[in-house]
Image (cartoon, rainbow over all chains, first blue to last red; front, top):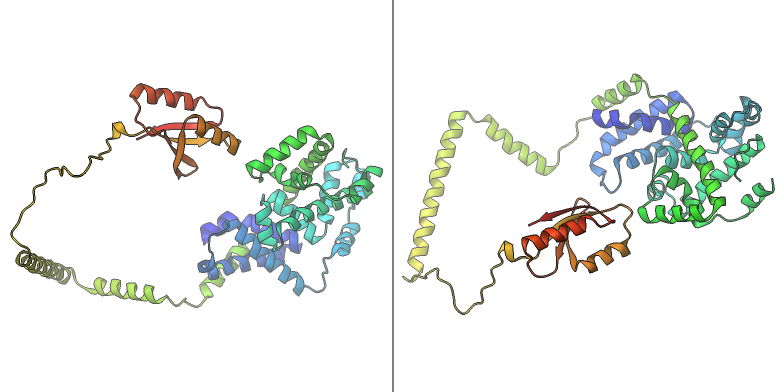
Length: 166
Length: 230
């Protein structure tokens, strides 16, 4: 368990943190995830990679944690509201820093969009693996990421950032 | 703004939707090739791919900046594991544990005596079975000479067709592989860890002939590794 924890804790933590947006909750989350893994190790069928299995459990736990935190409704609008309170994409764009603006806009995406972007770009999951983790058909995985990127393009354009596309 | 509107209004193309996975390097060889070909043909797609590469890099930077969990998370986890009730072992595990426990409880001397007794019992058993067989069989003998009624079908290694373990290049197309198999009159007879065991033709080859075949095979564009095997 120590080896498994050592190998996967950082990625599991970061995936959880991007979903729940609270370090304390994310830390509790990874303890819960690995405890579940310890309890259910016998049920792991080896049909997918261990990391895919861990991310699926993390996602499930994160959504449960979010449901428990009724005060934080992380829907699309709330995500934007959180972003608006601090250094929003427009302000960042004024600084003429595309990289920072892009990062802010990535943070401003809805949880569904953030999750799929992270799974594909950071966790390097294939279409099939994302479908397994999120529990949606493979075609939906592809279209969801496309619309996440479209949303990102909208946010960047609203912030006045030109990237040469679209 | 017009371009943006156009993007928002239209449905995404199949290749376009695969671009993020291409950037992350998680597409299979076939899809990766399709995307690469489309990128060469379509400058608009290529521009979009450049933007995707930026998103990809920025997403990694963003995630990497999130840090790591503190030692508290690990302490919580292992404290929780320690507090878990002991799991009931399965029936088979209980039985094997019981047997192991029984033997572990015996002293070395008892164990040695038990083993000797077991050996004596086995010898007795073998003697009884042998005696029973001798009584039941008629007194006859058979020579180990060659039967003239059956054809000789020995396969000597030097008479067998040549074999090789081959790894194809990652971008090798199925059509190219099939063409190569046809050219060499080869058949795939086994696969081992991403390598294919091929048999060339149905007849044996001379040493020089087989070596020439291997050299030619190693020179093929779609072959990464080719090693002759018995």
